[in-house]
Image (cartoon, rainbow, N blue to C red):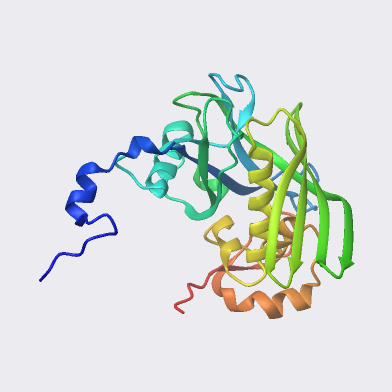
Length: 297
């Protein structure tokens, strides 16, 4: 069979022999992981149900740049691993977290997002039951802490014209751990016209959060809120056995609004199955415990 040649008359082997990767500027490739969990606070009144909180894991940077600032667990990808393998490795090295739900989120590639060089970040979303892990800082992390997530919409505007549709939403993020309060704002712009749609995320305020991680965190929260409505992703935040009230409360803190009990159970009962176990909390009527129903399709 005759070998194929390009417009310069070169075979693939000849082309590769003369190809120089240095002719093109190459970015560094990093991974950053947004890891969510749900915890519950201790309640002094035993007749009241414990309050649940959505939390995110951050590490305090032990080196430049952003020395002393808080960041997502992450690091650079080595030539012998995939981005997913790098995300798993970095999580384990920096926090001791392992064997959790993980999915690719988005690739952030703005040239100015890292002061050292052009670094592209392949971000991941992770979910874990808080009862299964004990976090310890390692590698180049000084501390690893769970921060309570508070997110809200500050301002929203919609403009329509002959050129298309524009929706601008400014989101505010607060991350709280004891007396440490981090915050930031991100402007999300959606442009739609007859040529398609485009989303942009611009950081308008940042206090104490390294790199562009405030944008990554809000993007991850938006993804989580979207997927809980049509998948069983929230079950990755639950222990092996739970009440339907516990599950409903997890959905409420993710979505940021109350759910009607009857409607919630009609919609999400397909995701769970009852067990013969009951709760034994003092001061409360025993409730049926459920577990995840693994969907096969």
